[in-house]
Image 1 (tube, rainbow, N blue to C red):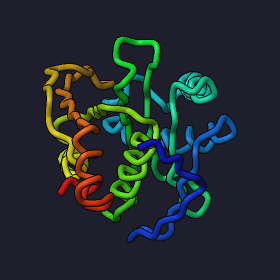
Image 2: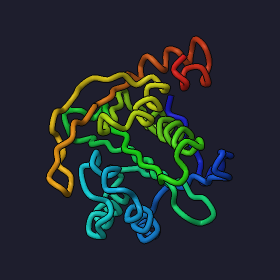
Image 3: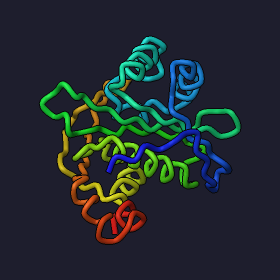
Image 4: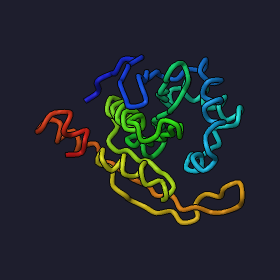
Length: 198
């Protein structure tokens, strides 16, 4: 299944109307403003600190190169979430993609994260990937539950894998999803049941 989704795309959430847009270089300033308001802990599971302008600039270049696709969740003109699909077609794992997602604290628990994770997951399905992974700190229980609801399962625990600004280390959990199984479910049961992990 390689359906290409079109953007912008609007969804209704408890936090209000959210518009999903594919990120382009022109969005860097808006994404930087979003990232700089996030609690530092929320950035720990990302490989790089996206609240730094040079990291955002490199991110923009990766988008232009096609290695990364990022979806922005925008509410009332402000970025409130970002879901990113990262893949490396030149690696030993060209069939694997990684989802990275972060949502503004003021819209958490209001359906924005769920809608963004489903939309990013759909983007991954459209890219024809066979496997997906996502990682987060072990205390991010709501995020873990969200991805488990999409059919992701814990595959690894990386102890003391990241160090915060105070020097404290944190464990990272890696969740994985075998898309081939989802595609079989889609054929058997239809898209909604398969995406919800039923």
